[in-house]
Image (cartoon, rainbow over all chains, first blue to last red; front, side, top):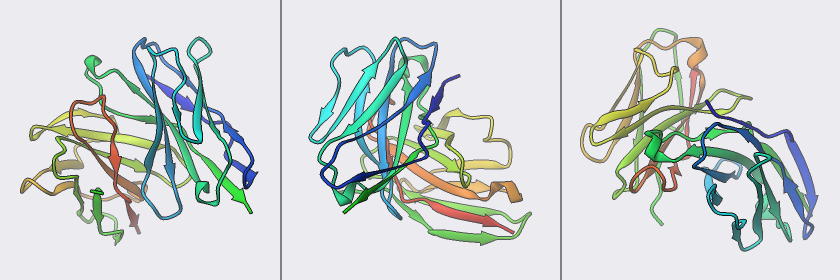
Length: 117
Length: 114
């Protein structure tokens, strides 16, 4: 079974600054995917960024980037130039490669990020 | 942009009653999921559904739960006899193809069992 741990229940960052959210996971799988989802207040979860475990290069989506350390089982999210609209709950999630017959996402408990004007 | 929708947004029910939570996945999606989040806890997988049958379920998804796609557009989660511990936020999700693709989430239904 997989586990995902987010050790920071809450974080805050000044507008325009950079913040890093931590995530660690545990798995015996070799092929898998990692995701960061964002859930703004009273809105649905949307995908921010995904990383395939077989790719060495860290994923980047505009102001969002990850630091994927496979050996350490670490998957942190860096948000650069933070904006007020980044205020949300951020969930780290794991999914095994579906060839193993699994489709479920395993989530961490989330980090509540507040961007301060 | 197409979105997953869920109704109702909040459902209050008495212990022992049956509830049906409804979801309309994105129209060309083929895989459907239910997750739940008890207040203060992690989002947990309940079940995945493909080709009109359950493809995977968690140990939470016991005989009290069932899922159905009754009409080709709705995807429902039924809880036969609700317990206090079923109080949670229930999220529906869908994905367009096999399980390696992104799952798109609905806004959730908050279920309160009294």
